[in-house]
Amino acid sequence: MFGNIAEPLAHHAERKPDHPALMAADRTVDYRELDDLVSRTAAYLRERGAGPGDIVGLALGDGIDHVVVMLGLARAGAVMLPLDWRWSAEEKSRVAHFFNAKSVLTDDSEAGIPGVDEWVVNDAWHEAVARSEPARDFPSDGEAPLLLSLSSGTTGRPKGPLLRHRQMILRFQSQWVTLGLNEHDRFLCATPLYFGGARGYTLSYLFMGGTVMVFPPPYTPEELVEAVRSRDVSTLFLVPTLLRRLLQIPWEGKLLMPGPRLLISSGSSLYAEERNAVMERITPHFVNAFSSTEGGPVSLLTPSHRGKHAGSVGRPVFMTEVEIVDDDGNRLASGQTGRIRQRSPWLPEGFHNDPEETAKAFRDGWYYTGDLGRMEEDGFLYLTGRTKDMIIRGGVNIYPPEIEETLLQHASVRDAAAVAWPSLEFGEEIAAFVVADGAADEAVLIGHCRLRLAPYKAPRRIFFVDELPRNPGGKVVKAKLAERLPVIGDGPVGRSGATL
Image 1 (cartoon, one colour):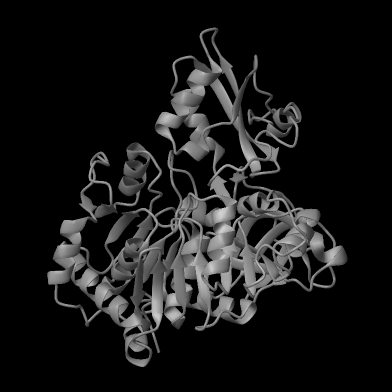
Image 2 (cartoon, one colour; image 1 turned 120 degrees about the vertical axis):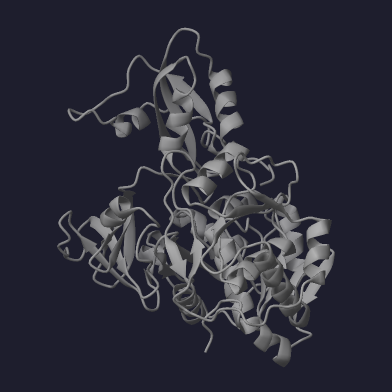
């Protein structure tokens, strides 16, 4: 019935016009207003030259404007290229140029993104949108491109799978069946909209006619609990880092969040004892979702999966097949460890304009997630490692090559390697090993990274070594570097009440 993810808004505007669609601390937008806002935004975007198939970068802060512009781009037929507003201007520029973005939308008039046509979402923007006639002839082709979801770093060669409207709608349907999401829910969006979890659930709820409450970071754990309790929240999505911070609140023997019927977590795995603590102290209605930027939902661990299954990532979600195979693609027997691959009707064809990386990850209708795991006879999937050279910090994918390349840009650095450093607060932190001349200084190099990368990508510590261990093929053996990492208290970050 609907071929464009923004198309149902007109339907909701007729059948439930006064139902709240978006809520923020100081503003509520019902479906009548949302449909009008999105239609006018789409029209204005077309006036600015963003038409079907045009790629437009989206570097907005978290709020109602961000959601309206996403839907406006979809309704106009343009392709969203999400960019983290926290990135440096150089990072945004590199990604925008790599994907040939027509322009970049920002709410910072002083962003100064090099070589990019910036469209600033400010008061003048809103006035122009209000003057535009609503666009009612938007494309309704499910095969039209919708989203380039960045799945690698901002330096070197970025990777972005191209999702079509039909594929995104199929992901929504899997969520509805497997998680039981429905139009009566009040979803709290408490993580950045740049990331796939917040973006995906927000768009899913608006597609079906639910309510999305935007509660952007930064906030304290106590403020998050108060928001959930006071806003009649029924569902929310949190990354493991936020769950660990909630567990640091002194427990008084009562559930922190007794109201929600569903708390979803994804981004990285929780230890079994952490999961048990979440279900005992925060809410028993807790599910772990295993998914990826490229492949979408893979498996789900539900509240009923306890005991020996608590250390798994659950069973495959609706419409997804999962297999464990060897390096040649041969299926392995139950209990054997190998590469995880997924087959779903929402898989993208590959990475946009990158046939080399596409050939590695998308083969014969399957997507190879880059994870190692095993499947037991009862259908439960267990993760045992990653083939991808990736660090997951607080649920955010961080790719070592961009950190290493940034370090190597410093005159004192001759060689560098970034590795994951176990952390109870963030799951993993970033440690860098550097071969440098005598003038090198740890604080200077970390500052060098912070100037060129988003703050969360800067190494937590830098360790100086005489040389990096390499195998006969010349590749750095990062496992040997990881063995050298010290254990400090309960991790390099430790437990604190810091805001996100």
